[in-house]
Image (tube, rainbow, N blue to C red):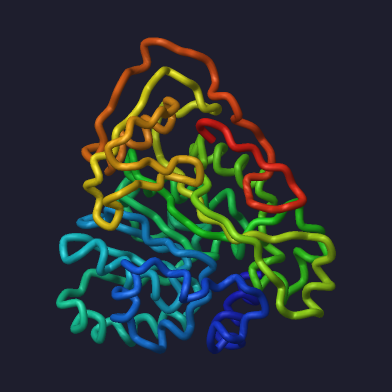
Amino acid sequence: MHEFVQDYYGKQLQSSDDLKTTACCDASAVPEWLKPLLAKIHPEILSRYYGCGLVCPPLLSGCRVLDLGCGTGRDVYALAQLVGPEGEVVGVDMTEEQLAVAQNHREWHAQAFGYDNVRFIKGYIEKLDELDLEPGSFDVIVSNCVVNLSPDKAAVLSGVYRLLKPGGEFYFSDVYSDRRVPDEVRTDAVLYGECLGGALYWNDFLRLAQAAGFIDPRLLEDRRLEITDNNLAHRTGNLQFFSATYRLFKLEDLESACEDYGQAVIYRGSIPNCEHRFVLDKHHVIETGRVFPVCGNTWRMLRDTRFSEHFQYIGDFSRHFGVFEGCGSNIPFDIDVFATQSGACC
């Protein structure tokens, strides 16, 4: 599969127009604050973008960021502008042709930005421990529609956990399925290259994440994917696929359920581009100045990370009131044929 993916993305795909699904993000859906950053990226790199989401979380100034499966570097060069001259963005990819494009335009971007704070490494995302990357050295790790292409997703998640600083986060978009993908789809080379064959069943992903140490994965957003090629749609049968963005925090003492300790937070409105509200995840949209009840895990995700100074904290862990009502285990994505639960917490 490594060889096929390298050939598919290095030689067969020449632009995002060659893809046969709606995995790539619609440019019109890009947030307004991000569009000026993309406007400063070389057109060739923009045309060879194969991501399925946006992996530019807020509050990155001065951070050290790692992009897994960086391809031609679109996200690297967007993130480079967000971390600024005091930060650094490292891109890792196994495909020489894509890395060559990223490297060829490095000086062009340094001139456009006024600084050079990126570097690219050839390597496999399942073998991060073999790269010259110091454990516990990254504030944020991102990945855009690449983990599904890996034949060893557990190794990817373990490697990410090892490289993150305490309180760091893995913020990534990828493709998931509503059930386990059968062998005839998983071994179909084109379906694999289109990010469908390697898609994880959403519940298996949660189990792998938790096994790697990311106890409470948080879903930020999701959308259903359309397979625009009729032949491929027929080959996938009744499977349904979703593009979803998750954030996983490397934090000690997170619990497996959303436990209620009577805590709350007040957002100060001080994070750039998030003046009126802060979106932690799909079920935590925190308005500026408003008392917002949270579970113990959410409390730690705000207090013990780079977001800490932007909130006021109410309560502690001295008294427990049980689990937040509504915390369930149904499919988390928005879909008409599945019932979804909306609880006070998750």
